Image 1 (tube, protein in one colour):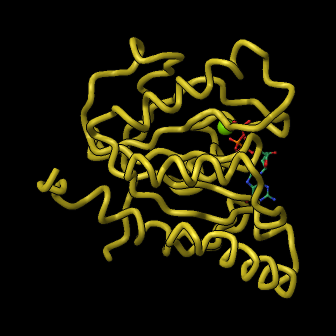
Image 2: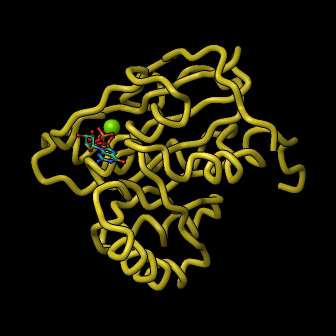
Amino acid sequence: MNKIIIKQAEFIAGAPNRRAWPPSGGPEVAFVGRSNVGKSSLINRLVMRKKLVRTSSRPGCTQQINFFSFNSDAFRFIDLPGYGFARVPWALKKSWPDMIADYLRERETLRGVVIIFDVRREINQDDKAILVWLRKIAAPFLPVLTKTDKVSRGQMMKNFREWQKSLAPYGTEPLLFSSVNGEGMEKLWEALAPWLFSAPDSGG
Ligand SMILES: Nc1nc2c(ncn2[C@@H]2O[C@H](COP(=O)(O)OP(=O)(O)OP(=O)(O)O)[C@@H](O)[C@H]2O)c(=O)[nH]1
Ligand SMILES: [Mg+2]
């Protein structure tokens, strides 16, 4: 694959609900995962923009659906609020499932979903629920294990094998990633390319 060069990057909209979605344009890939797992940081790293997407060490940083457009809308990345964080305001927690589910189910330009896990943690009930649901709506998805820089190589391989086992029932293999040292960048771009740079699947 040719290296993707991000010539232009822009925030196009932050949407708390469907009415606020921007008109569809370039193909979209959405990033989901538990609160604080590193979704926003991963997007910044992928597109080599340190401050495009707001990140925070405090969970619950992203509270709406944020749409980012690249290279004159050749494609878009969609940053979703994290799930499973107890201190997120109650109103948001209550609206989260609708906010995210509406988008994932109904956005016609959505090509795929990257589901992000912390390589140091184990799969939990929330993760399983999302995976089951993504399969149910037949959304193409790709698991990514991030924060690999936080563990030793030995520990990482051990955790990687655990994640492989946890994700096998959902029919997918995870990729490894670090937003700090860039591990896994190339493989992740390679995995995203068919979603972003090929003609949409014509068979409904
Ligand atoms: N060491 C390390 N830290 C990371 C990595 N990715 C994210 N972080 C840190 O983890 C924290 C959360 O990162 P965010 O990117 O804001 O996480 P998020 O999933 O978008 O969080 P919410 O929007 O709250 O759901 C921040 O302090 C980041 O600096 C990584 O690959 N390695
Ligand atoms: Mg975020």
